[in-house]
Image 1: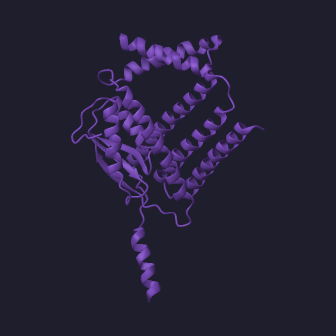
Image 2 (image 1 turned 30 degrees about the vertical axis):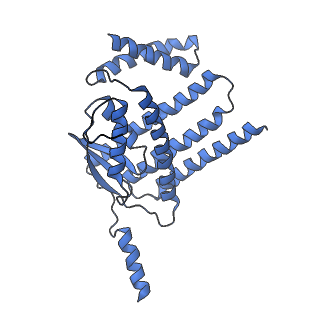
Image 3 (image 1 turned 135 degrees about the vertical axis):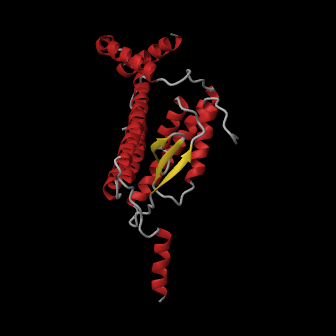
Length: 160
Length: 116
């Protein structure tokens, strides 16, 4: 119930920001926020996630930096006359448990340099990489540690 | 035009350059998987720059926050869409494109040919 109210308030806040607090917009926003809240409750997996707030800032910095490099990297590859790509599939054993942390991890993987999260088999993440000569596994491990520490989830060999 | 306008123009131009580069990647990359790299990553960064440039033209905090929120929502949806397209393609049995000759080998072969 607390989680329902929290999600309801959160999504209402998002709507207020998007419509710049236009009162008339609630005609659409009211039903949309309600449907969104029910969907979020239905799709949620496990207990509500916990966050470490300072680590959220660290994650944001890492994410912005990574997505900047990701964009530069892919632009460089597409404009280079020799098309320097050597794609392949890389399997990555996930340590993050099912739930919000894993979902966030998989979303961010697609925005970092050279990786697109493609499929998941149990705890194995299938990643499409644009160049399998790059140190992709190390990059995924680093991201997983950053996400885990933000959600206060202990990992094996965690050292962030 | 004041200094902020010039900064805006520069930022938005950088953003457009990323969109253009992503589009070129879409055309040049060989298969659905590598094209996803180009569209997802380049467009996100391009949109980030465009939004940052437009942000400088707003006086109100509320409008600025709205723009950043729009960027975050686009990030979420494009990342999710990218994953869904890649997953569907793989499960339908589409084989990712591979270089028949690894690039490092190709380099050394041409070198060998040049040496001869």
